[in-house]
Structures are given as C-alpha cells and as structure tokens.
Amino acid sequence: MHSLNKRWIAVMLCFSVLSFSSIFAQDTVRQMPKKPKNNDILSRMDFGGYFGLQFGTVTLINVSPLVSYRFTEKLHGGLGLTYQYYKDNTFTPSYSSSAYGGSIFARYFIWGDLFAHVEYAPLYITNFVYYPPYTVDEGKAPWAHDILLGGGYRQWLGEKAFLSLMLLFNVNESIYSQYSNPIIRIGFGAGL
Image 1 (cartoon, rainbow, N blue to C red):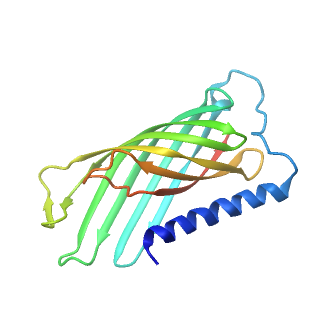
Image 2 (image 1 turned 30 degrees about the horizontal axis):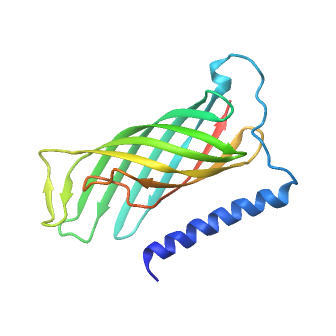
Image 3 (image 1 turned 30 degrees about the vertical axis):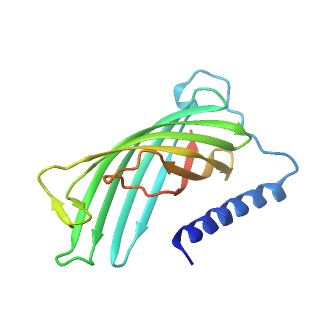
C-alpha cells in the first residue's frame, strides 16, 4: 500500500475515534469550559506542546513546547519553540543534524471544538544534507521558512486539559523543509 494512502487511513481513523467518543459521550457538542470572567492574563493562557520519537535505522526526536492565549472564545494565538534531532544510520559514516526554531500560530474555532490553524515555523538546520549529491553543508546552515495551513479537533480530557489532532499542509515547502505533506500532529494542552 502506498505510504500516502496509509497516512490518510491513519488520519481518518484518528478523526473517527475522536468523533465517536464525543458523539457517544453526550447529546450536544461540548463547549470549552467557562473560565472565570476576570482580566488575569494567566487565566486566558494554555500551555502544552508536541513530542515525537522514532527509533531504528533513522532516529528522530522532536520536542515542541507551546503557549497560547485566548483573545476571544473563538480566536487563540500563540508561540512555540522547536528542537529536532535527526540521525540516519543508512550512511557510512552515519549522518546527524539538529534543527532549532520557533513558531507563531493562530487558531479559529469554527464550530465547537473544530478549528482552522495557520502557523509560521522557521527552523535553523545544522549539517544540512543536499539530496542528491548527498553532501553535507557544514559551513552554511540554512533556515527553513515553513507556512503550515490546516485544521483540527480538540478533545477535552477534563475541565482544563485537552488533546488536539491536526492535519496540516506545508504551503511553502522547500529543500530545507523538515515537514513533508501531509503533517499529522497530536498534541496536548492545559489551562491554569
């Protein structure tokens, strides 16, 4: 089976599981828990992120903490940091690199917990490999300027904690991009 087909099947399976759990949990769409109406900045913030691991011939570690602010009940914006470690043992000697960066994003909740997402995610890449001719450019580390567009669904895990599932597309993909389309993210978050 083609790898793109496997990705789409995985995305559809995740969306189905999240959708069925909310359908059978209650008769109406659950809205975000009401926060106390005060102007305290911390009460309007959520903290969370994404974490990824892959081990084997190719090792990948991704750590991406983030913080978001609820400007309104429907519009959220935030900042994130990203660190990625990559090691490929198919080369002799093995190849490894790191990427450091950040992101700025916005989410608009269209209906209930269904949201649209836009993100600018620049990453600084060390030891970039050009494919082909498989040469490592150690002297000049490039920046990847990725723009991610898509949407997702937020599933509440309690009064303040949630899990989010997103399907994103890099609309500014280049040879430096660390993300290949489509991008599937599963993240977590919690408010104070």
